Length: 456
Ligand SMILES: *Cc1c(COP(=O)(O)O)cnc(C)c1O
Image 1 (cartoon, protein in one colour):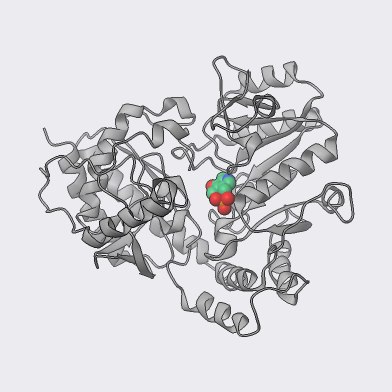
Image 2 (cartoon, rainbow, N blue to C red):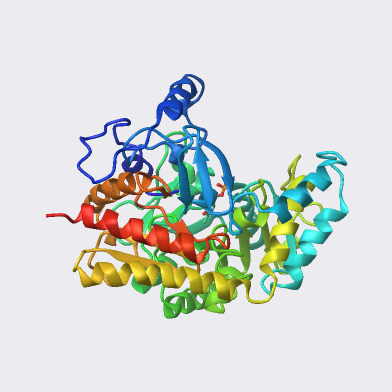
């Protein structure tokens, strides 16, 4: 959910050019009706901007239910879903094990504002199986987790500035709604109205995959940088897979300068493997943040670090952070049930193999037809890019004009029963519920859509 905000929401909703594909458009009567009503209640008719169909054709689909790898909209259209609620649903929609555990917990009440054994249970599952955290704190969203991790880093180091990368999204807290200005190393500029300029000035923004910019930033802001924050694998503005050597360089320069390295693993945590991108790169971030998958579809985030660093959090230490619903028992139960499944032997191996076969099959077809189209993928995350570049590792390398092709593809895919997130900057997710049969069906639909996109 990054793709710098204006670019993304600038489209003209509802503009549907004449259908020249080979399938009729899906019916959207009910969704349209609900959308009209929603627009009278919510800005843009939505409760999170990325849900609006501003950068694809038509009005947003209102979803009625999900089961396994499928969702159904209000008009009864059925889709194979690759959005997965933007990442949390690694077991697919409404998995019985998660649902049953949630219902069982709900029989005893919804929230107490006092500790429960369920918090210990989820913490133990995480800490025992993840060498990157010794102590953790649960929050109610990824945004909150990251915001708190930044405060912790500032409190721990007694420094104010943070460094982030252009093309990484870290939730919507003030100091992170900041984009690069012009120049290699810049003070951030706000990317949203309402963020004070003085806040943005505490955030330095540089391009990804650029050791020179990193070196220059550390030379310039020596002794002022509390933390560098990076997405484990940047997956909110295309899929910008960084080289291991770059991650190693990043770790070293942070260490040499007493700057904490924060891996924001809200997407990659429990996705690439149980230890997320830190495990994937064999990296040692000082603080990690998780969300999405962690809550099994309910609102949960967390941040964690060594016991020594976490000792600075209130009430042990002087960094304040709290939450009325933090560690909510119902949400903890969903997390426990989901993470328990992920820990079963072979889970990631099987999921990642399935996703790789899917991505590579599509790529083989596109390459054989010389289409300017790449499927970038890692673990069970994939991204469709209309490019002939072999690697895309920084935000600048994405051609905004290529999004016109995504728009056509998105419409053709909806018409073939495939649901992708409504922006070409967004990644897709394969879940454990996608069977080989459905993946094969989806692949055929994608190949047909590509033929239409590239039709001369
Ligand atoms: C989704 C996301 C967030 C924000 O999480 P919310 O639960 O939407 O607040 C932060 N960082 C990354 C990397 C994300 O993908």
